[in-house]
Amino acid sequence: MQIDYRNTKVPTDVVIKEAEAGLWDKNVTFALSLDKINFDDDAKVTVDDKSGLKVKDVKTTKGVVTFKVDSKSDDKPAEVTVSGLTLFMDRNLPAGAYDLDVFSPVMLGAADGNRETVTDQKAPIADNGFLSQDILGKSTTKRVVADINDDFYSTTAKAGFVNIITAGREDTDSFTTKVVVPVGEKYIVSGENKVEIDVPAYINANGYTMLPLRAVAVALGINTNNVLWDQSTRTATVMYGSKIINMTYGQKVVYVNGAMIPATAAVEITNDRMFLGLRDLGNALGVTDITWDQATKTATLNGGK
Image (cartoon, rainbow, N blue to C red):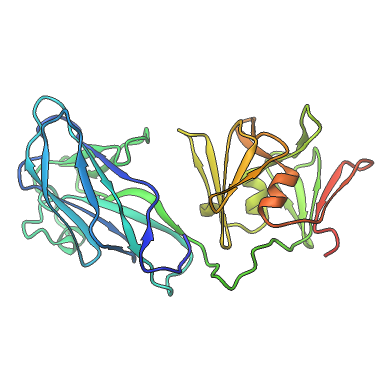
């Protein structure tokens, strides 16, 4: 995300799954918060139509989204979806990843429902129940919000839920560094620097030079937190300057800030790595000077720099 607007929309929903039916008691409060970032305006909270669970008192107070359970689930565990989230983006926030916390003050033993009381609590957690579920509904790793059998707890539901890029509107939209990519070698040359990469570029069956997306992006100076992978859709996202670049395995198209750009080669996955055509990556970064040396099998971006 770019620090530009007060009402920055969150493009994904947050799904909270009940570990077992009837676990969440009536009047239990749930809260969603971000480190150093406030949620802005009221979110929408909906419940599945099979569990029987109902919620009430959905509101945003001091940057924290909260809601209460109005009636317990019956025979099936509930699934609560929080959508329509917006953020208040302070322009002084440093670039990087910001974690999403999802917690229940009552279940964590904070009788007054105050988040700081939960966070600062030093004594063992009271036997007031626990949450143990995949907060976003897709991860195979359980993120425990509180465990009644342990003195340790974590309210982090999704590390790096928000990634902030340093670039503002004044930054260039184009990548200007000279980059040399020798096919078959586990390195590229970025400017004056030789940068090692874990998998080499190759030429595919259709004759296109394919680059390992994450390795090259990081080698070009893009923060690793700004190169994202969604296993469920097999989609990679690169956030560079004012650009958000999306590409999906098998598709012959790249999206830049939502605009569709036809690609010369379909996105491929080789050795568990996503590869994108050289010219397609260059075009997405705003590079028009792209050359190929057949004799040395070397591709160059911004060769005139």
